[in-house]
Image (cartoon, rainbow, N blue to C red):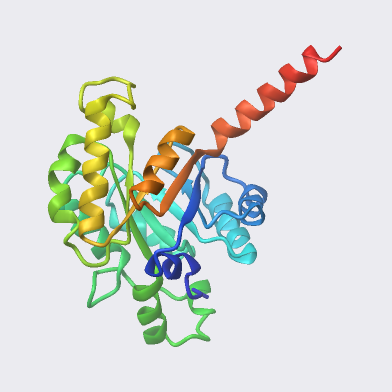
Length: 256
């Protein structure tokens, strides 16, 4: 059953939260995130192939260990969004949000009437019928998180209107794709890219929507803290695991 979201509560209380992008889909990895102390994880289905069975097991593992697991999808397809939420995801993260209409479509797909147009289903979310459907609808509309990634010039242009929408819980920056969109290649530290990300943060703060930064250095982390940012995405587990393995191996090889 959909429980009261610890992440939703922390956002409402403006607590500092720390998440990680999950590109190695595994129930064991999800449990590790929980016991390591992360406030949330985002399972990536945009760039990573994940079968339905693995997705279901990851969501169950996250539920059992108390980890709010969001699922990242590539677009505003209502069938995809509804399926992820029906599987029990704590919320949805949509990549490359590029227009006000796209943001509205995402909200409509994630929320039941009267807030949206999500189709109703029974199953595990309602305890197989032990929770009355109307009670579940009220709870889901209250608890399910809607998170949008802004990763292009079009998304930046639409953001002043997007942040005015009800039901948007968090805006996540996507510096690399934004840099590519702005014509700066992979220069995520380019002044123009950083200026756009700071504008993103300011628009969110003015509308009291959580802005989630992805700091790439201790200096960036400190900078965002000084500017009142409370939500941070550590990066991708795949890259962290690889670097850890490689560094450990190099240390072992150099040991005499």
